[in-house]
Image (cartoon, rainbow, N blue to C red; front, top):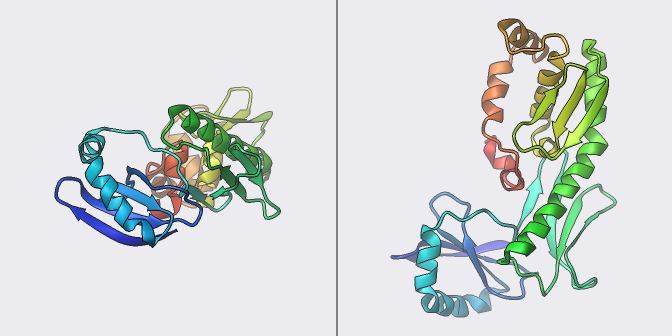
Length: 250
């Protein structure tokens, strides 16, 4: 996908225009970039004239759309690129439906078809479920190993490890030694993944957030607890902030 043009519109603001080889039609959505209002994706440069016609024809709807607080959505440009989880979106009409697949490199591909309507609410729900399923698969594959390695290194006793779809917190530790981790954790930078695991394992020594607890976490993170905590606050447990993880830490 390549950015080929920026449209400066007096009413709609700046519109970023991309070409995407897998696109079969023109689509216009909210832009996630600061300073831009809309993002348009067209099959090739030859469609730029048609895009301008659509903007004029749908101007009133687009103005209303720009004012609305719309939820982020998955489209043909959606991708996640983190240390331990990589996903890209591709067109494939072979099976006639949306699906997700893990290739030999361990990376995930979200396939969409000619019939995929990215503007449909139920399609978005189905696509989100597929991405979360992939995150959970990868998290189940890797995170328990990390927990065991770190627990052995610091002498923490763990009775059970659970991977959940929790969106309220990155992790938790029960009084019985069960460590629960959100599958969204797998999309964070690896040092923040380690920080969350160390935080939860520290609760096996101190089941509270007292000074004693924070001293344990700070010691186990090499004196970086405050720095790591400040960084992780830039992230949220959902697939949309996950898709731009690399930019958050720069």
